[in-house]
Image 1 (cartoon, rainbow, N blue to C red):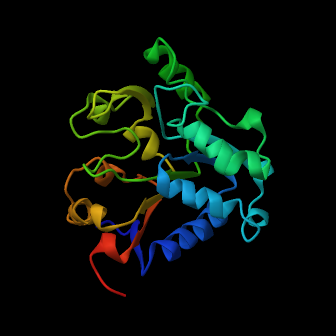
Image 2 (cartoon, rainbow, N blue to C red):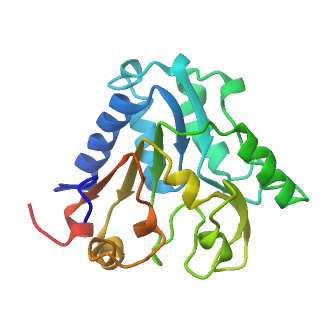
Length: 225
């Protein structure tokens, strides 16, 4: 693996999430792309806790999202809605600096172009997860969004046929820092393939002038600590 990729392995999911919170607070000031899902939700809860909320200058944070489902912001499946409730509203991030993907728009191509115009040239920190098929953000193995090399945000189609918006590999690979969270035995097979250099979507996140930290637990890595 390239020297810019680091795997940090922790004995339990709880220790891994705490390590992710430590890394977030060390690198967060600036522009940040958040992820959806149950594991990031646990991370957001920890960041909003008394132990962590004062470690980040929330006034200096501009928030984006790596992907979004085609649902309104108050829908239970909305990444934006989850992040607002679990973290952003609790720590007082300026709502004008929280940029929602309008994946519920009728014209997803136009919504993707509008979002691309909001993005800075380089994101300071991108938080990502990995699905059971190796997808990350909404870049799925069989979808055309994965091969996009020009646009920074595009519509995407999940394996179940649902429509989404997603940042593209050019956007992710321009980031200064990328942090993956992958926890549990269900992630072991795909994580092993990423480590072996397989061209899974998650394995193609290789910033050209940045670094990647994979924060994983022992079950995902396939080891005991």
